[in-house]
Length: 366
Image (cartoon, rainbow, N blue to C red; front, side, top):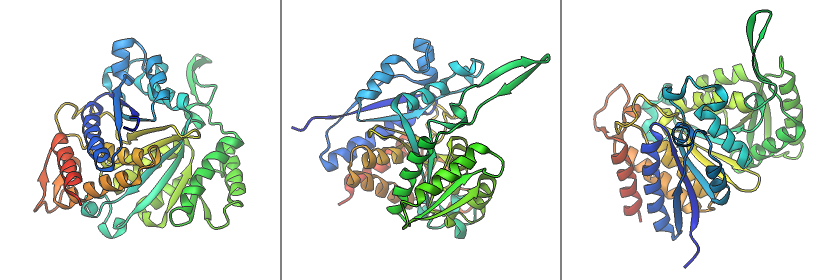
């Protein structure tokens, strides 16, 4: 019998505790189809970890994450912990884990499943067939730059953060994006604000230099404000987009709405040594937590990315994505993707049933 592959599961907070078990069940079904032996274990992160250990990222979680082949995470945060100092809030647990594992490359695909064309915020003809990938640098930029803080100057408070990137940080994320563009449609758009920010002037210079090593990839540059506008004007003009931490965070959420809901957008965060963290882009959604209303498909699709990038099991990833497509084609919807138009033939389901339908499709597929 082959050795079992260790997957660390971090449900986190809010709806994370609902969508992650559903995704794990789907992973078990996909693994059974492909003969993979998986072993799942669970650890604490975020607000739940604060409540139980006093830290948003316990040392034990970091050590177990380093030993695992990959990590599947739900969500962190919630109003319960909003009053805590910034460095002690649940979100610092996620940022800390990314840094501890060296997860510098965040991949956020925006793929519109055909049955959801009417659920997008844009006209169906603008998004039909949409398939773009946002590559976000994850461990640098303004989220990690120092100095940072709030201080009192001349009897008033002043907040400050530092947006900083080194050449090697830009070089390595650019190469990830170029490599991915080579596997897709050979087009890469680098997003910056080089007209006003020196850090992104350097970004543009380095990305342009890396582009010389990829003559088969068409490189373009776009200011972030224009990129945001173009995503909602003509999103299919993009293939792969690469950008820094802050801009990538914002643009990927914009792209999510093109697919119908944040509940449909998965992500992968990868390290140079092959480590991977997989999570839905949506947050902890405390307003619907515990009500069996959350859409688990972003987490399920994140699990598909886990099979593809960390387990080198594209057949399992393809099977999951195809099962999701068939469930949507059959008319099953959670509330966030139900749409506001003609709902004839659609059936509203909860978190657990949506997962069960995906597993049914996995197990019945030839």
